[in-house]
Length: 457
Ligand SMILES: *Cc1c(COP(=O)(O)O)cnc(C)c1O
Image 1 (cartoon, rainbow, N blue to C red):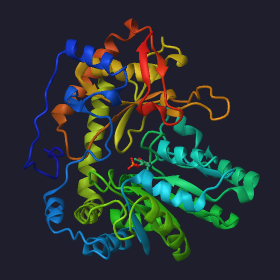
Image 2 (cartoon, rainbow, N blue to C red; image 1 turned 90 degrees about the vertical axis):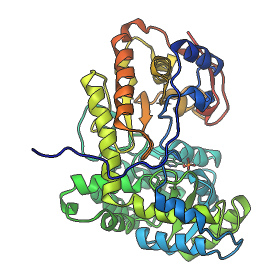
Image 3 (cartoon, rainbow, N blue to C red; image 1 turned 180 degrees about the vertical axis):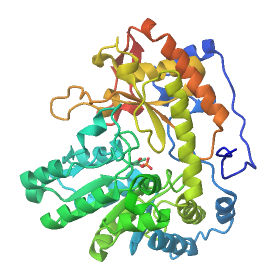
């Protein structure tokens, strides 16, 4: 008999979580103005809001915490992290930041100005926020297949080379760089192929542009390349990562994802002049260049996390758990984005709740229903997140309305996955009774989804 798959870790520390009643949850979510970001975490049984900073560190990472060097300048921890970034990602220069968006803030301060245009594959919300805040424009050039949830394509994160070239031709000097998000978060945690990254490099060289990788889930991307790209089958994850980053001039990183730490980020750069310009902004916004928003102990844990996060067994354990949940959901008939991505399951809310018009925040409605059903907290990736058009101030309706169930790394067991699937299965079986969505009571002018207040219609 072939033995089943089993996790490549065991557990030596646990944190109790509490189940609540439906009645409690109905009151709590109303008090939170139907915004799941407003809930106390104690009111959540299984928290799938994000896989960002919510993973469990390893015994080795915790050991590293004990030997951090907290010197203001030139700490050993800084050099440990510098070496890990050089070895694994190939960047000669780096700046630590407190998280991914801080890396964007620092790097874009050096590179993006008013009127610029930044093409890429479905910019992440903070990335887009930092571009639009500087009165520049983000243009999404992702392949069309990414927006059809039931179409199979091995690399739905890919950029459409033709669309990208058209932007480069049309906007010329207004394009400071191309940004490639690996994996493509907003398109459903979908990977970008190595071939696509190489094609982007060729195009960038043709037009004299820099390529920046938004790298939060670069290791999961490498895992999919290993599984799905014939020429990379025999390569290790670290070898694939090396191949990927040969095509980048710089990277921004949210270390809270694939580097499995609770807080941290960095910028990697190959060009010394860019490093120097960015250093000034780093000192202004984050901290001196050898700590920039991170403690020495955190830089140590991050260096260790980069190593563990790029091990095949770590990635296999994680991604198989995401798949496990996806397969369970399919058994209940729940429509999800396929193929299943790296860090999360994306439920197709428009297919799930066809009775709700797009003006009534379909995916948010589904997120609220799931919370009430089982105390499971997911997140809307839909119209709330897409925000208003900066010029017309009208809602932007994205092609997809998704409920994202992000799975924290090394945190929950497959029994939790069964519970989540059953909760959503229950909502699915009463979907025809859900006829009304939500309306906005108040919202912030930018990145409104974090603080928006809603009411049921
Ligand atoms: C999380 C994330 C960011 C922002 O990082 P934070 O650490 O949350 O500030 C940027 N890009 C992508 C693709 C991400 O997933």
